[in-house]
Length: 396
Image (cartoon, rainbow, N blue to C red; front, side, top):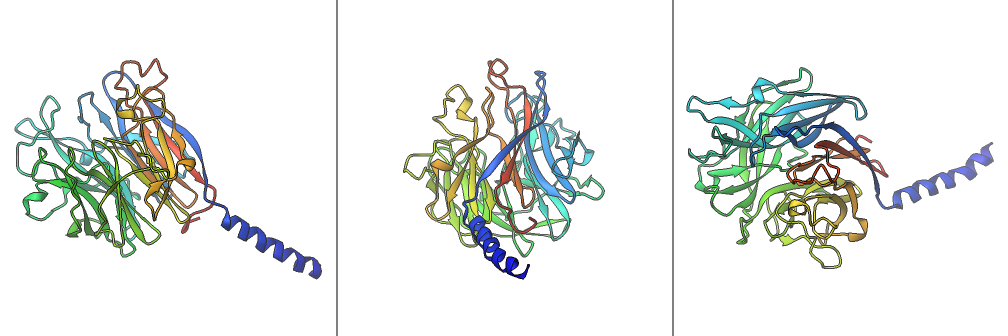
């Protein structure tokens, strides 16, 4: 028996080394959370985050007028395989009707877990709606970044609070919208913003470093301001940390852009997203988001050239592919469809790490085209579970 053990050990070590050398891959388990298509509203902007014992997903009703959204709803899931409950609409994060007939609400929300305080933060942008659902810019700083805090033990939310930013007029319009943000090792947050003097000006992007004590989010400083004199500029940025560096993906009307930096505040000049063969990625005028694993960095995106000219802005299907973190391009051979195109747009989505074995891409079908139903869309809200071939660390 001693001899047998001595022989078996090298084989075990060899197997472990072989597994470690295998490139990271993933499979997709696509789940439908719910379906809704009644002509009155669509469920929209679903984005998830882990909480102890499961996950929370925030979601809103799109009220069939451009960028017109309900108060924030949320759903809970026990574990990663359990049933979903909700959507729930707590009064703290619902609409706030004003005496002058204006409705205060919040849009483009991204939730995230803050481990040091044991709280979930939902960060988005405040909007002022007219009675017809038009976004207003009728008072100074109408468009600002707001947040609400969720206690997973009680399932209670705080009311929305405004993130106080510098008095500089460049922050008069300052949104964290549809944006992934990062919790640093010291517990501080890196919150990407797109900013301008007004909604009519060209947008620029910067990252704000904030501290959070479990109740209040406080701005401390911001980094470089990234500018692009093309169309509406750089907006809806998403940030991720990977391999000791930070990566930004940025929306522009004509093409998506990418940048990287060492501290999360200072970044190189943004460059257009391309494939590794030099061709443009083909993602434009919509969001891209990140998924990071210790063994790889990935981008989730939409693009032209996928037999999808019938989709508004080519916003379906959703693709996922590996990113070369040094050359900052997408590896074409690694590209996979994670949510299929069924005649509806999928451009407003979220990406999140759930635990050490899987991450989620969450999206609802935008039923904005006349033939969406005929092509197979159902107003579905999807969770595309990205199941990694190797566990991430920590929390395997």
